[in-house]
Structure formats: structure tokens, C-alpha cells
Figure: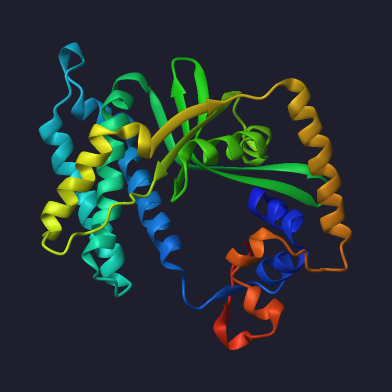
Length: 293
């Protein structure tokens, strides 16, 4: 059995959801817009840091002067990819595309230029699989593995419509960062969380799309603390020992489980399988995945 943070967390949250998602391998035929927006931003950030060493050599000159004109040319390719991502899915609403463009460009202005100076190596979408016990492995897939000097850090990117500090606190106290630290094959110092808030401003009736995008970007640049939060989280040896013990216990429960019961809670309102649980939906609303995830 191959486990992951998502699998373990879903099992702990609701075994019925775990059954639908990982045993039956169901997925909604229609992906929620919020998920698509998060995926588009994630793809853009991954492209931003891909081939980091090569880009750093191209962008950073003598005296650590950054060639922002060259950076802008390459960023245009990523921005075009954001547009194409939505067009390919039949989404042409300009405010949606402008929102992701602004979030991405705001992040670039806030962090990317400085990252070019301080980061020595960045490995996007890093994966490693670790054996927990015979027949059971833990797969970790990390947004980014970062080296500054001799120190490794894990990068985790999150988009949210809520308060970034609340989200970061939940991430820090939760098990996601611990799972990545425990499962990765590097001696990482901790997890750096990049939390990017979706803007709350809306397109005005008399406003063009171009003016709206500019106003969005100005929001991110002038008040970045409202929208973009980067903070690290580290964990003590005791915390990691308790995490390991809990993970082994849950993993054994997952292997031996034969009763996938429903656990009602606040998460139900966001669960894609709520229609099946509540009886007002049917299997025609879902596809079967053919992968092993």
C-alpha cells in the first residue's frame, strides 16, 4: 500500500470520503472553479522555479544586479500559459484569469527577485518514497525543495480566500509539514509556507479588464501583507517522534480497515462526495480514475 499525506488526512477526516476517493477512485466530472484557480497558480509557480540554476545564471549579473527585462520576457510565457489553461477548459471570464495573473505577478514582485539572490538550488515537484513497514510506503510530493548554502528547506504553496495567517497557523500545527519532513530524503531544516490570498476586490462596471488587472497588481504590491505571507515552521524532535508514532498507528488502521463509515463535520460542506452520502446524487456525476493515486 502506498500512502501520502492526502490519503492519511482523508482517512482521519472521514473514512467514507477515503473510500470514495481512494478505494472506488471516484472524482467529480466537473472540477470546482476554486480548484482550477488553485491549480493554475500552482502550475505557474512551478514553472517560475523550474530550471532555477540556469535562470539564476541568466538573470543575475555582476554585483547581484538582476536583469528584470529578461525576467519579464520569460514571465510573459508563464502568463500566456495561465491564459491557455483557462481557455482550454472553456473559461473565458476575464476577471478569473486576471485574478490568477495578479496573484502570480504579486508573488513575483514580493519574493522572486530576492529568491534569485539568496537561493542556490530549487527543485520543483520533488518526490520521494519511504518505507514505513513491509508492504506500506509513504510517498511525499513537495512543491519545492530549496537549498540556501548548506541548508535544505521545503517549500509549500497554498492559495486561500481566507486570512493567510490563519491558514499558515493551521498548516504549522497540522501534519502536512511534518509528513514532508519525515518522508523526504534530505535533512531539511523545516517548511517554508507561501500562502497567497485571493483578492477580494471586484471588477467595477465602468472598469476595463486592463485597469482591473492593474488595480489588482497594485493591491498586491502596495499592501503585500494582506495577500502574501511567507513564514517558516520548524518542529522539535519530540513533535516528530509523536508524529511518527501516530502515523504508524493510522497506517496500520488503514491496512486493516474494513468499515468505511461517514464522519459528519464542517468538512462535509466542501466534500465532493456529499451528494452520494446525502442521497441526492448518483454515480453519473463522477468518473473513475485509472491511476493508483
